Image 1 (tube, protein in one colour):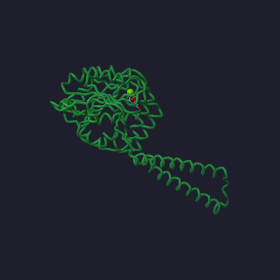
Image 2 (image 1 turned 180 degrees about the vertical axis):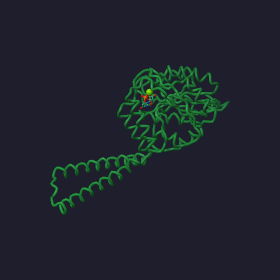
Image 3 (image 1 turned 120 degrees about the vertical axis):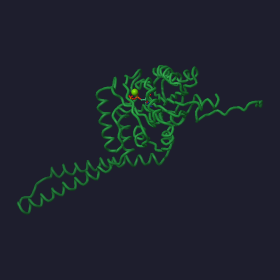
Length: 331
Ligand code: UDP
Ligand code: MG
């Protein structure tokens, strides 16, 4: 493939894939028809995040029939955010869209994202208006989480914002300079600023397969988000300590007053034990919290790569094949 062809890519669509063999072909089909109508040079990059099913061969066969569909295979499962990042790194478009593989993010909304981008939005967010097929529990936890996150970090996240968005190349270049290991894209895209726009979409139920976000993974992801944006939880320790000291001071005053003035000693083996264990509980919770933040520092200090690539299909920055000069006859 000629390098000049790559220059014509105006729009990149990045799709992280983890065990989505039942979705890749259908999504590629719908994307191709939507993108072709747009009259822009485009590429779709499927990032296989260590799938254990046939996702990669589906991607490869798509690539063979249409080279604008490209594949990037990570060496193992690195997680949704790292897969997105890997795709962002090799994308070529002046505008880059990220979306899920399970067809919950409708490709048919892409023209509206592109319109908002052409109208000047450097970041086009999407907000889900109806979480089709999601449980009451998932909706409630997600709403609560976004509220707590916004409160703690001062970065305003709206409920229903997922990793379905468009980034202008200028913003993307800045974001790719962020070297933090626990990059939380949903927060970072708010943090960076720039003119932005928002497009709503109706979420469809997952097409095939099941969610990769179990409760444990969701909690870990949620904590990563908060701890990479806010140190308020650490400060809460100070508040808890001060409150505890103040209360125990009141207790001591009360004990002295009742002994000296009212003339009776307060008995209290049980209450002493209760109070001591209560405060030890708080103390250990905060030790753990402190450990969490120190652990994050250790991870960041190691500075390991956030993903490793094992294979790439299609042109891109990572394995651009040098062209053989014309007339080169060497064996
Ligand atoms: N995904 C991934 N790596 C992972 C987990 C998920 O690349 O370790 C992909 C997955 O294939 C999908 C997207 O991230 O395209 C969102 O995952 P999922 O639909 O399971 O999350 P949910 O929509 O349930 O929050
Ligand atoms: Mg999904």
